[in-house]
Length: 115
Length: 272
Image (cartoon, rainbow over all chains, first blue to last red; front, side, top):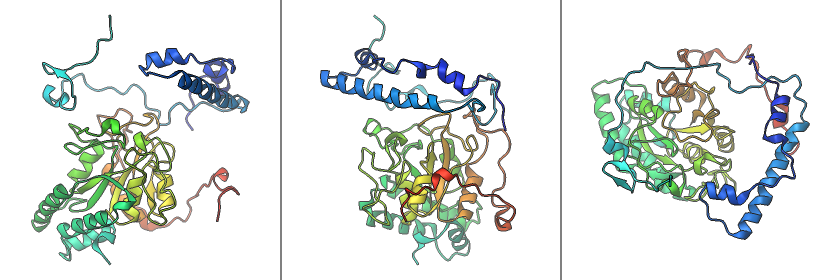
């Protein structure tokens, strides 16, 4: 049994997004903009309903009595795995960019994200 | 009995005693794949490359080279990166993706002398548990085409159950090996998290993904884990303690061992 020095599950749940008011609406237009997804008006309404249903469903977790349950955030107990800071062989620039359709001077070419 | 119906262990003995060649064995598997295209178990079949590899394996066998999987035809879930072989994760997004490197497990299996017969179908990005959610069409259950084969490692389980290969790799995050192994009546293994490297395998949930395989019996499963298990410098979550010899205790039986069955898994809702 691995014990973790952390908060009990019940407290984490109440700290987290799960404690959001379930009637809260998700800002679908904003999420869609961030994800670069063009959505029609009816899709926005559909997803808003679905996403809020998911939150309501997850809310059910709050009913579980987790007073004596320790959190399991990982199972191996490994921490801070490091390696020597040494250069090791890696893909060549040509190999690394071989699977992109859009490149320039051996670099990935993407749309500008900063204005 | 056809060669493709053999277990790994049986095939190894046949190869060693010159009762069969890797070329014949691989050909039998490819024939079975082509005969059962309606099961949709494969996204990519490496027919030419597999036969070339098999010829090379036969040469090595004739030179008495001893490798743990030499000449054995194996299929890989199409989530495992394979150098120079298309890797799609069953999504049209990666329809033309040809990785520049092998996943650690693929490297290990290849170094052990195995023949890669192809890449198997799955629920796209491993998101699913029925085998129906693939951009390349659903995988069918060989026992009954009206039933789902289970997923996400649907094609791998089906390919082993229908003798298209001797073993196949899979990944399990929330049942993706255990379900299809059960639905197809074969042996599936979800190893402990961190026991097998995740490097080069397209992630579903990195802190939960477990890399395993499907075989026709338990002995083959142990044999394959002997090859795939172990620490990998390219995956910091792999366990540092050395992998055990999983074959060692196979003949000792189960006396004294406890088997746990979660009560919730055996409910009245299950039919038959």
